[in-house]
Amino acid sequence: MTFSLPLTPQYTQLSGAGKTPSATTNNDNDFSALGYYAVFATIAFTLVVFLFEAYLDFRQRSSYYKTEFPSELSKTVGNIDAEREKELKEKARDVDDDGKKREEGNDGDKAAGDGKTKDDNNKNKESLDKNKPLLPQLQSKFSKAQSYGLDKITFSIISSTYNLFEEIIFLLCGYIPYCWDLSCHVGKAYFGWNENDNEIKISLIFMAVNVIIGTITSLPFELYSTFRIEKKHGFNKQTPQLFFTDKVKGLLLTCVFGGPFVALLLKIIKMGGESFYIYVWAFTFVFSVFMMTIVPVVIMPLFNKYEPLPEGSLKEQIYELAGRLEFPLTKLFVMDGSKRSSHSNAFMFGFFKNKRIVLFDTLMEQVHDDEILAILGHELGHWKMGHTVTNFVISQLYTGASFYCFSLCFNSHELYRAFGFNDESRPVPTIIALLLFFQTIWAPIDKALSYIMTVFSRKCEFEADKFSVDLGMSQKLQSGLCK
Image (tube, rainbow, N blue to C red; front, top):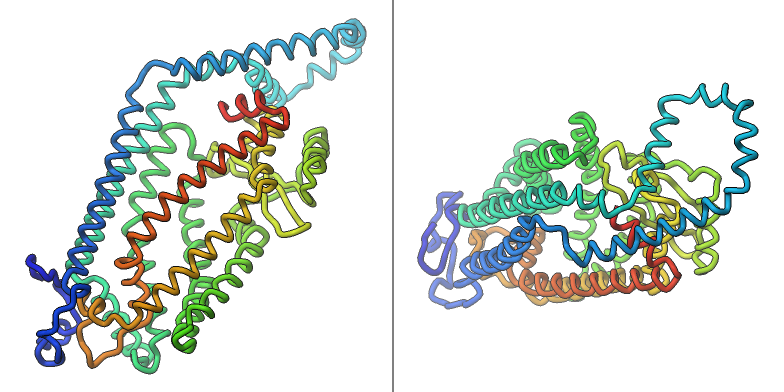
């Protein structure tokens, strides 16, 4: 490895084989800007992106040191409490006439009342908590929320710093060519494969090695985030056994779906000729639709339990809301999100006339039914305003554009030589060409598009909020999101 231009990795295919560049290369005197600056430009771009995102993180981090409850939020939540108090008084007035009847029946029901279980009392306590004014509760939790945010963003800065050093060290040490040569050795030693006749099989070994190494290096950070930060602030509910069970399931699913996907993708690129990007585009589209179909009904139930929403007023109101918006709702589920976290959520999935909605059980415990409706009004707003379809179309256009650009750079051998694949007697693996393209040439485009998509995503969120507000759910949406 040298630290003068051009930067070259410590390990290359030639150095690994004990060869010198002059023994196999014929164009040493030809200057290629792409090959000359590739490694340096990649590291420089990585550093620039890291510094910019670190600046944003530190700016956000400073806001978590504020101890004063935001005045604008205090005013908004105060208005919500006032509206809520008004509603409760109106409800109390409506049932006042029935009070005497209930008192007359108290003697007959007293025995039954004495038989209440501890769980019933807990439910009543939760119900009373929901009816308490929001502002005092939020103010009392403000310091805890600030502490949680500070811990999370500090951890994010540390983990992103580690990822930066790992990426640069791997790049300068020649991790990618070494990993490929290791995969070739494993394939030949254990299966009799070689990179000329069995490139796709060697590529699958290469991907498996990378997945294993990536899992090992990221595991300490995941464990700390889950069992230190999330547990410290009362959000984590999963056990170490459940954590590792999920991890094993995830790795198995990666093998079952990721392996065939990569193999078919590489096969299409190799057989598609100069217009392979068209076939790749069609393949990724079909695969995306396939995964969108099976993930909710096959994969997600492997991690969580989905049960039909019990009959009652909430179910009736949700179907009524869906009917008003002409949303083709067919099923309603409750997911046991509480076995992993106390965070709450709601989402929908399905194609055409077969839509389904899933509510986290934590959401149903934390908010009132009318607040759930307001939150669903937001989610249905995404559907009604075409945000879901728009994002899917954008993702497909992105995929098509990226593979078209890759087809233009597919034969850029000077790029591959710069990153250690400098033995011209050996073929450049397609998986390596893909990896280096997305890591170098496409990286600035991808980062720019990701920022644009972030802005677009925020725009969609504001539009969905407005949609729920226009349904007359403004106050309920605010109170539900505050909780």
